Length: 112
Length: 187
Image 1 (cartoon, each protein chain N blue to C red):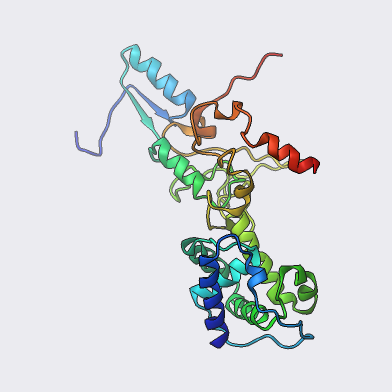
Image 2: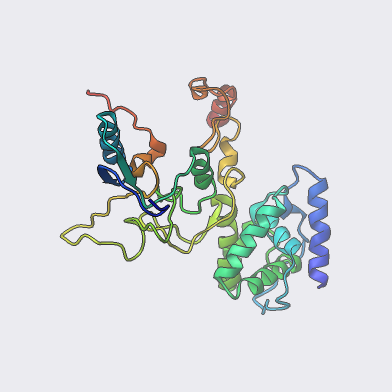
């Protein structure tokens, strides 16, 4: 087996909330798992620093990586939705996926 | 450039005289009628800082932030250096001796006046250009964050979003200046 050759029972594409949970559960059940992720791993403090030095703080995704090899829905020329209204959901390309939006925290919405 | 030498001297004066408004320190020369302002296009970093101090009415602007603002504004507009030179001339000759005259000045000299608004905007907002909310590319450029002038009025009670200025939930305590703030408002 060379350095560029890998083998696993399951290959999960994407390290977001679905992919990482799926990989975790499979691994717990004894399967070998590989996760493919197009984006980089970035520590939280760098995301905070990126926010502070961003010139477009109205763009909530700007602090996250915008790598040319890992385009996202805000990259010009990315897949576009067509229809009667503009629909452009934000998505992130990094280890952890779009779960990182809002710094990876999700404040509970009160039931009332 | 004699004008810039004079303004540099004014700039040094501001830095020594705290609390003194730069526009009041500008040369007290009667306003002249509309005349060509275009002069020397070479602008030094201290020229830009001097113009910025005059336009914002602040005497403690950061040279490092000024350098970023000047780089961003001049790369977006090829005539920006000439406009800064014009503004410097207008301030020095008294055509723009006080920011209270700015509306009149803008009617007579729209180009340098537009540049002046871009300069003020960069200092207050901390960026230049127009940020796009849903695109990773636009013509905006970063100038400053915590030192953006828009945060100064509330700097005694809160900090710009990112790091908390004190302990968790610091904002639950009413500002110490609340009483005097109210007195100011009702006065």
